Structures are given as C-alpha cells and as structure tokens.
Length: 277
Ligand SMILES: CC(C)(COP(=O)(O)OP(=O)(O)OC[C@H]1O[C@@H](n2cnc3c(N)ncnc32)[C@H](O)[C@@H]1OP(=O)(O)O)[C@@H](O)C(=O)NCCC(=O)NCCS
View 1 (spheres, helix red, strand yellow):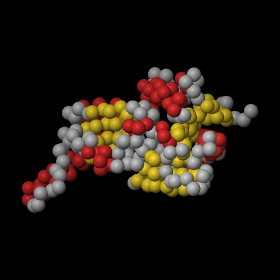
View 2 (cartoon, helix red, strand yellow):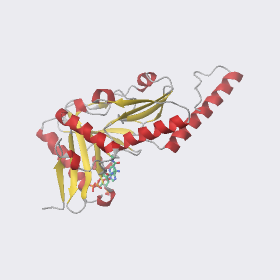
View 3 (tube, helix red, strand yellow):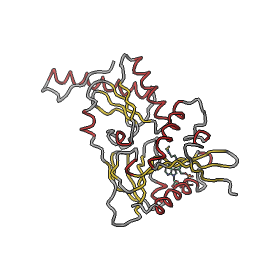
View 4 (cartoon, protein in one colour):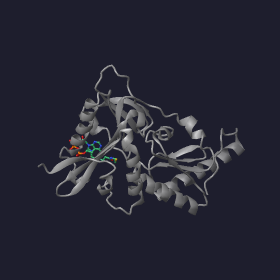
C-alpha cells in the first residue's frame, strides 16, 4: 500500500476527517463546514481527503458540478474546483497533481465538458501554476482572479465569470455588510472577527450568511464565499485581519474627509463617502 491514499468523503465519514487542515471538533468553522458538506453531497459535490498512513489527513480537493458551484461562474456541464490544498510539509511530491488527476478522471467518467477553477495571485486560493502545468488555459480574469479551464470537449463554450460588481454593490449601499458562506472554515472565523472589531468601532455590521450556490453567485467578487462592503463599496474580497480592516476603514475615512474638503473648495465631488468612526 502506498504512503498516501485519496479518501472519498460522505455524510457518514466526514466528521472523522480533517477539514482544510482543521481537526478540532470544537472549532465552529470546522463544524459548520462539515454540516455544509452534508447538505452538498446530494448536489454532486465531492470532497476528497488526501490521507497519509503516517501523518493522517494532509490535503484535500473539493469540486462541484457547474450548476451547483459556489463561485460566480457560468460553467454549465463543467466540474468547478472550489479548493485544492496540500499541507506545506507534504508539498512538492506530486500530491497536488494526484488530487487534480482524480478530479479530471471524474470529469472524463461523467462525460462533462471539462474542469474549471478560479485561481488567485492573492492568498486564500490556489495560484494558477499547478493547473497550467496540467494543461489548463485562461478563460476569464477579474483583477487577481483568473478562471482557468481544461476542456474535454473542444467545441464546448468557455466558462466565464458572472460578476456584475456595480449592480451587486448597490444592494449594500448603507453601512457595513459582511457576506460569508460556510464553504470555508477560515471565512467563518474571519467574519466573526471583523464583526467584533466593527462593534468596537461603533459600527453594527449586517452579517449575511450566504446560504446557497445561487446566492454565492450573487456576490460582487469572483471568490464567491466572502466579502465586506461599506456604504456600497467593496472593501475586502477575501478574509482579512482585524488590523487590516481597521486600516481600510481609516483610509476610507481620510479619503472621505479629503473629498469633503475638495467639494467645499471646488466643484462638487461625485459622491462623498460617510467616514468610518
Ligand atoms: C497547489 C498545491 C496543492 C500543490 O501541491 P503539491 O503537492 O506541491 O503539488 P505537486 O507536487 O503535484 O506540484 C508542485 C507544483 O505546484 C505548483 N505550485 C506551487 N505552489 C502553488 C500554489 N500556491 N498554487 C498553485 N500551484 C502551486 C508549482 O508549479 C509546483 O511545481 P514546482 O515545485 O516545480 O514549482 C499546494 O502548493 C498548496 O496547497 N498550495 C496552497 C493552495 C491554497 O492556497 N489553497 C487554498 C486553500 S483551499
């Protein structure tokens, strides 16, 4: 038997698995992710754990059919990878490729159009490198987010992002809104930390739990499972620290003061912002 095996998870065995490197049954993010997964298996979502005989669970891949993907992409009949991760100590031995190959094999077996994945040069997502090596090509891009595809049917239409940022930001035009889904164990913790920090600054956040794949495709960010908006402006599209959050609010407030001064001395600025406290 090889040192590593890929374990298919399901509602029965998921509670015993490490989720995205998190093994603690007391961790709220992990608990919510496990419950989230139990509701997703029936939609065709796959969560595979990479298990080492010596070290236990050391990696994972998660993917879903395009119609149930928690990413704002149009990718009908594709499999969409949400996450791919191998813990640092085990990287560089071909294990990431092994997990990716198992997803590609599923795509072939289910005769779908291919596999798509959102990558990012920023943190909290895999970069494009491993996928490019495996023959993926770029299909779309928004800022640091790149949508890659490996087609199994050459004539299939390309997947694409469906992020209408301007329209979607308008939905959250007043105050602080944190949108977060249980898809990511880290997102949950980050949302709680930002909400607590906001309260210490006198801001009561509107914390919205993103409850389904359709709702996640209505987020104004390609990440699809987390973002923070302040007075209709997207201020973070991935989990951030409390320090970074405070600094963004401070910069926002300074910009608003500068905007007010400019509008008092010159032509009216287009839309002055409410300063953060
Ligand atoms: C991407 C990743 C799974 C690759 O795992 P791995 O076991 O090292 O993969 P392999 O050994 O099969 O291939 C190594 C290749 O992966 C690529 N790679 C390295 N880091 C990468 C990253 N962060 N993202 C994408 N590809 C990466 C490189 O091309 C590397 O080849 P090189 O060593 O010659 O440069 C692993 O680097 C990882 O988990 N990175 C973090 C990903 C992440 O942030 N996920 C979000 C949490 S869901």
